[in-house]
Image 1 (cartoon, one colour):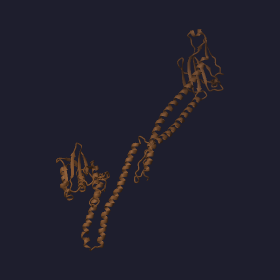
Image 2: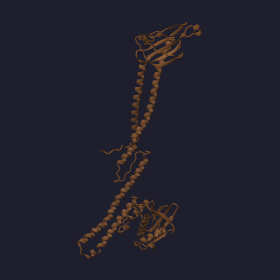
Image 3: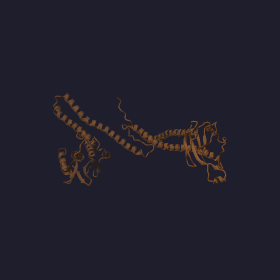
Image 4: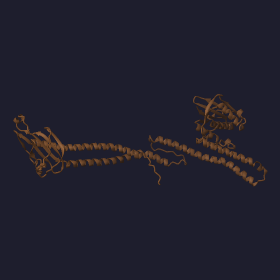
Length: 477
């Protein structure tokens, strides 16, 4: 069974469809309104034509002193002749047929419709003509024109009913043609609008497509790269800037990872080489007491060094991946620092004399005990190791409304450079003075930095006057 393929959403397709739909709806509404208006106008013209013919025929009916005459000349209105038989009229007087068109004479016994309507009114109805065609009939009730003044003053009027009928085939053809023209125009317009909208959207999305093409060409493993813009677009620039920040950060992380991998290999290479050398010498000279007497202790010391490196690397990884579960509790900072001083006495026997601290006895902080213990242990250990032997290391704690700062200062033989200050928290970074010491691996301050990030602490390093290095730890309250 083939896996179900999820359809991707498309900004371009959605924009084109929505804009096309809106514009097409507006245009179709306009076209439909115009079409209905034109159809109505054409029908009105047809009805007006019937009315004009009816009015003309009414003028031909004369009342001469009560005698009605209908003076019709077929040569002027040939549509009513027998030869054409396309249009018809019929006159009634007192419900009796008074006159019929020649075209109606060929259909004996057929009368046009005659309905009761008020005088001087008319009515138009749909009607099937005597020849079987579909048409319309106009029925008018009127008073015959009186010729002499005395007849008009007598108060007697002869009323007539006139019905004229005409086929609507030509009208229907015109209406169909109009509808077809408007329909084709509407369809062509919709496709034209879609084409134009697609072109406009493509041009509008060009900066986004260009950005995508530049992203495809990026390679963070190579030289430093960023996404450059030929022209700035207000909506794209924030995305481009954030992507450049992300790319720069990832390039730095990649380079740091390469350096860290190389440094880890270097740190482990030395004790491994020592183990191999000791083993080869012991195998070659198994009876040499100078070798065998210290072989076991040497192997143990080298193994412990490797264990320390691996444990620190694991702790660094855990701190950087948020794998440590924080358990906040209130600690008395003065007592906590004293306990740390006692723990470090085996590494620094003169810590009581060298460590000078100024901490209020009732100062409390709410932190994770393990994290703070690891952070301060590494900071104190580094300060005592790198500080000038015999000179004091100062620890000062200040508590503010929103934070608590712990500042640790130790004297150096010479101040650190800006480059060293920036790299001091990098994994496996070591000052030259520690590279000859097998117990220093350059992981302590990296662990401190990762734990600070995990706990939302901040840590910074800067040079102080009198060649002193200050490490400033800030704990938010």
